[in-house]
Image 1 (cartoon, rainbow, N blue to C red):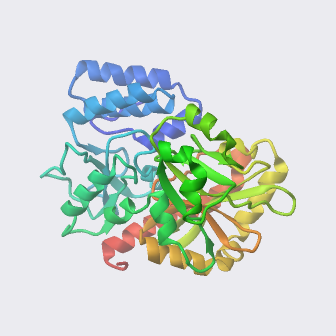
Image 2 (cartoon, one colour):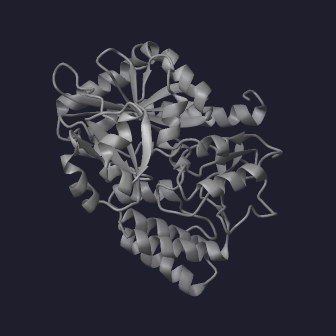
Image 3 (cartoon, helix red, strand yellow):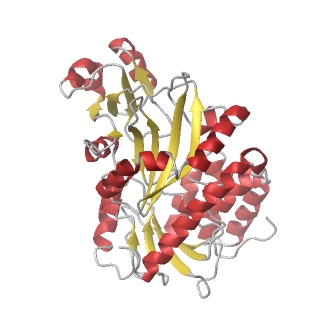
Length: 400
């Protein structure tokens, strides 16, 4: 990066793009450290450095740097459009934490005419009295045990906010895996198994803890607040429970019934979809021989056949998948009620929409190598255009 912004964040989206492109992030880190040495109150340099450290896997050091930044400053302008000229001035409310603690909205507006400011609110830090002028406010704080008190605090602050607020913090707070399953129970065309929250001791007596609510083996077990498959395991019987518990941290776990969603060719297919103002948009589809699919481990990069199928799926999505599951998407939007929502899902053998997770903080981006995933660019930019249009519509009062 040739020039460092003065008193402005480089920001998550640009730093991710630079990292994936193989730029010398060590050199950029050195420049940020030099800035902070020259000016110990340069909180923007510290916060960008925190992001780089986390992208490099140095989570704890990155979080320490983040805490140092937030002790100096709560509000940060991000590189991009100038507030005086931008089509929309957006205020993003975030809380402290790692890269999964907040919605990575920056990736959706990277090339849009949006002037972005980020304000951090924590249990200790209230909303500042003075804020930059803004046309809309987006709550980016993700649902988690740690964030629930912050979301409730933010909800009180925003109760009579003078500009449109996107993603109601109380509705975000309702997105725990067990409550989300309750919200979507009996919704038309949806399969989302009942999810039970149970303690470590109760999990040792798994059969008794689950049969009373209609759950039986095989089961899916994961620690509360885990993501990206961390600590996730399928259990065909109770034999492996002791070994599982000895291998994972945490005192609370989610337990749900496993649904076999293989197609007739024996492969599993998992989609990531976002709802923007209630309309579904496809982000990706991963194909794997293993039930626990993540795009990074599905072998998409190494299989032309898988990528060809994904490309066809994305092209046909609006006329096929979205039509088949229109009632399900409508029910999700009505019951969860967020302006922006991510859904990881599949299809059951009988054609229902199988929901694995619905939350507001899923990573959505167009950073994959174009020479391999060129077919993704158009559908991803449709998502970005739709998100930008939603912001403009809310600013103009055309949406609730």
